[in-house]
Length: 306
Image 1: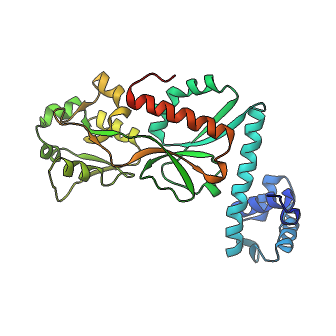
Image 2: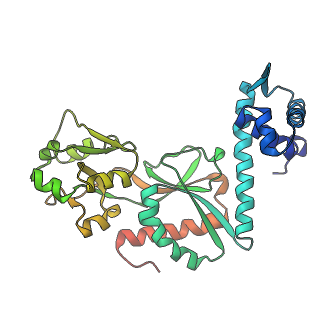
Image 3: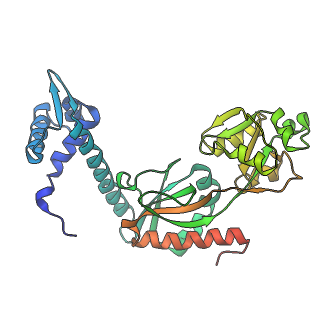
């Protein structure tokens, strides 16, 4: 689709507006942009004239965004960020391409990062820039090409490709196990249970799967697997964790399975790669998607990746 230049204000006006909106101050924006306050004020006025509406409410010596200005600022900030990241990616790798990927922290560091050298070896012209996201976001407002998603196969405005499933196990330190001598699921209720904010019903589903229906499941909340695993390692309590993400701790003996006689329980949710439809044909994304699905399939089946 051809861009209409009549709807593209000069970059100088947009930069002045973005800085003013972020600081809620023409003076602070002027300092950031190395301009005078009056110059920034004139640029904002020129942009308002182009748009036909006021972006700021001016009150004595202060300014604040108008409702229209708030919506416009959100869009412009995202657009400028995408331009900045595209330029940075091109300068970093002018002969190839770059992929801005949002990752789940523990999945990214424990599973994905160790395998990335294989991808770079197969695709030496592509750079991957990683950023952390704990939950779904709007691809239209973020300078991100794709993201790792754990949950149900639903992400508004995005396409999804299945990667892998997971099994979870209750894990604790050897000291906690020695203290409580867990023998059956109900015994876990004697110890503090560690919960993840992103999976508030995980423990309840696990107990239901064991045929053990409990009325209240109390404990501590954590926002990341890594923190919950560290707390379990330190003896704080029992955490319900994906086995493949704690293999290092299980192998070293820092963590033990609280009830090793019980089978592992498969999570209802799955891991997916998500991307906006508008980026589906982007060559770096296509290359990464194909490689990632092969890597996940090889991991699930236990076969070496070609």
